[in-house]
Image 1: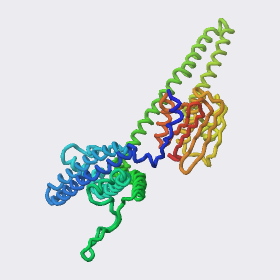
Image 2: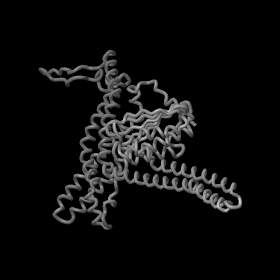
Image 3: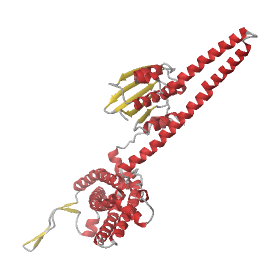
Length: 447
């Protein structure tokens, strides 16, 4: 069950984010990523340069091809380590790239090497090992310098006694080294040893300590972009995976719709037609011996025929309503709203009709949401809003019901989400406990 804390959200921190940042676990994870990145970058860079140079030099012989393939395979292995570091220390949600065997046309060592050399993922991994070295060096120097100076100056009052006791000078010296003039050594710069100077140094350290986490965070944003751009799956492969997943969802939805239509025909219209045939058969037998009873049976059969026709009309409307084809989305939703138990109003700001497939998905999305209002929300009023922005159609339905709608309980909203995702759409749910509920569907204007 949701608690009051869950509904109200997390409590705000009493300490501002700027003062809290130096002590957050995220800050130390990011610093650890930068610090460990430099030695790994040196290893990656050295491996890549040596292997690629050797492979390129041996290309005049057959040995160059397997050496280059080994270089690329090693870079892919280093990419596994980098993705693991990014997930653990930077909280980067990165998918694994497509494996080499998906590009193989046939089995064997030579086809495997050919697939490895043709793979754009492999070459992007190699490029990452070359680019990461200078960036890791820069990020390491900047991060370590800022953090070292920040903590050194912030804690200066606690360790300034080291200078007079062990180094023979009153404090930190600022400025150039001493110079010898006419055989006399002149002390250069100044020493930070008086209480006001110590306080200023501590204040500067606090400023640097406050800024250092954000500097490291900005540097690691570049690391995130490099990992996502060079070590993740290609945009084309990601799109193919999405389309495969969407195809499965569409197939499952179509199969579920067919089963629903079959069930409705079997349990509804078919059963009534069977009853109708039996009543007419009995009326035929009674026609001569008991005309009144036969007339009553014919009357009952007439009623069954009307009900069967109505169920067939409802079923046809569920497949694709004629009013949607003839008059468009807004009139179809107006007719749909009359069957909702809540008083429903509609605002239509569509300049023209969208694609027919999008129109149908929008209609059935609204139908499912209005059924949810009738069955679960307890709402008395609802409002449907239709509008277009750029290349997207938006459907928003708001009700004053009890709220608490989500995709984890039941299959209705989850199924809608999958159906919209199949056409690159979105379903946004804002339904706090106690209401009101606002559900917005975004669909492409054209398929």
